[in-house]
Length: 293
Length: 258
Image (cartoon, rainbow over all chains, first blue to last red; front, side, top):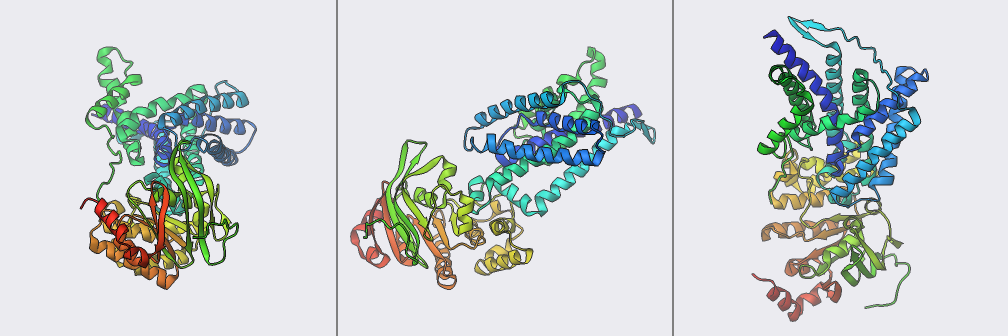
């Protein structure tokens, strides 16, 4: 029983890392209907920028602040150069644009800051903790807590601020938002900046775990099944989806993997997502349209 | 009608639309020569069947054509004496033009009150100003106050129309463009809505340009009307004069099944 709990809790905590990546997608998808393939590249760029600044001897807080500023500027540049000229184009056009964008950002990141693997130390001891008899990774706990704080902040932003209400208005009905004077371009800049900052948080946690390097941008591929399970339009869904994927991966690896020779983790999430597609195509929390006239 | 071009609108003219043509996707002609004017404090109706170009004309005025990949390819639009060509919709809203879209388009997942608030943000008002404006709207539409915490998508059609108008009023407009406010609503609700429009016009001096298929209701509340057909103005006159004209009554009422 203890072993089962350890596996489950370890999986759930690891799942919050997936959730963090997925939240960045949800934000942009909700506000602009774009599946932003470049989210992974943004995550890599943010982590690389932070590490590079730290290597220059900047203290943690200052490096973090500067990286946030860089991500915000990047969001404005993307809105100007990519989104605004392509407004009203089909989803596939925008998707291709973000695909291109992801290569540009990756190239830029490595060109400016080098392609070698960088270590990132967030100062979190990875000494296991014991809660009762169950062993829990301290790093995972911190990561989960960070995700919790981030989600709380986002919820406050969305529900209690004017920008948040405008964001949700744009997500609901872009034309109506325009008709009452909401500045769509500004909203997009804000959403991309927030997604960039979410990417920074995810990038730091992932980077601390596996080193800051090119492969960091591939965590997008982990976010996909999370989005399919949780739904593309719900932050809550991204969280639950992440938890399900994390827990299922860990449990499957331990209990099924043993019988078929392991190596389940890379693909199990996708099989799970496929199963969800059969029974719930909009995901667990996918927004159903309210229809009543 | 005066067909001379007027480069600068006279003070009484709130809106002057001069021979505009609107093209969708660079090819499809939706409006092919519409001229109209709205005077300060006027209620002007834009009448015509489905596809006559009413909505497109309103979108050209509010700038929302840009969001439909369309453009005003000829003619000019002046609001308060200033040209509106190439001005973003959010800026036009700030100048005082607000557009209540056909089909209401409330933010379905936002509460009624959030919908209203969203209309008030553009001037960056203080918290108190925003609350005052909210109360003002609730005074006009008491029904909205009782549903303030309800998701807008779950309210009735009439309530959604009131909400769409209330949300537009939160922008403190000078000119309200109303597109088919009667669509899909029971006659008694339509009457209620037009009554509020007339009151807003009388008490707050707000001007309205209303696109309608429901000629009778529109002519009863408007001062002046234009008749659109195939993207062109084919007739105009005071509401009284038009209401008295048999042919128009006959053509439109007869043309509409039911």
